[in-house]
Amino acid sequence: MMDQHHTYTGFNAGHFGPQGDLSALDRRIAELTELGAEVCELAAVRLDVVAACQLLPERMGRLKTVLSSHQIRYTLHAPIAVNLMDEAHLALQIRAAEASLELAAECSADVVVFHPGRVHPAQWADKFRGLLKREQETLSRLADRADTLGVRIAYENMSPNRRIIAGTETSYALDLIALADQIAAVDHPALVACLDVNHAQQGRVLQGYDLYDQIAKLAPYVGHIHFSDSTGLPSTIQWDNDGERLFFGIGDMHAPPGFGVIDFAEMARQLTVLPGTAIVIELKENHFRHSARMTIEAARNFAAAIGNER
Image (cartoon, rainbow, N blue to C red; front, side, top):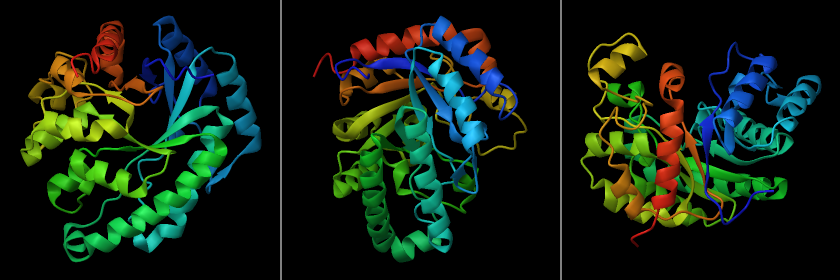
């Protein structure tokens, strides 16, 4: 049972070994527990328990056996490809979102993270009001379903990914205030914001906004946090691997605190969170191997400092 008066710290479990290897997932969760993690975020697409938006009963049973053997809270990251502004494939997108909610409920995961809608910049310029309105309507229906299943949807602020940098995609959720406005418009208890602090730093550099002002305005809706560091510099050079991204300090670094430039102390001072919020550390696998203990200690300190001077 989740303690509503406690802020949880832990890790995602996206990198546990070969995709679908539930024995490797079992070992990773045990490793996270040994590190003192209180929460583990599962990656829906790494489990091989859903095909064609349908749960696979035999695989699901094996997964539940693994998960139930550990004393840890679970959350779930839905497929990043879920896009509620993809009008050409909206029925499929909704089926995938619903399957993610059902998967979470079967895993006893109480939060499902989704990425907000994104479209081509020309489509956004022509139709942004209608796109926002239709996403609100879809989100409201999904939040109703989530509420029935006993889970919450956490809508995550976007990072400037390769498509955004290339000018072929955009999202209102690069801006934290716009994300807050969309969540407020839906106004559903099963819908909260996921603040990805690394993504927020990237948005700050790309769009030039006041990060702490934006965080303060998103704060009333924050019920989930993704925790890692970055410089915020966009990936506008040619690069081939994550080692090069770290070396140059560009893009979605998912690095330990101190490897980038985020002022976590100031961010914590500007932030309040909803009861039961989980702070989920997202590190590249190489960073996890050398900096997991340091990072979870930093996340605990961040959790303890949230809202202390407000």
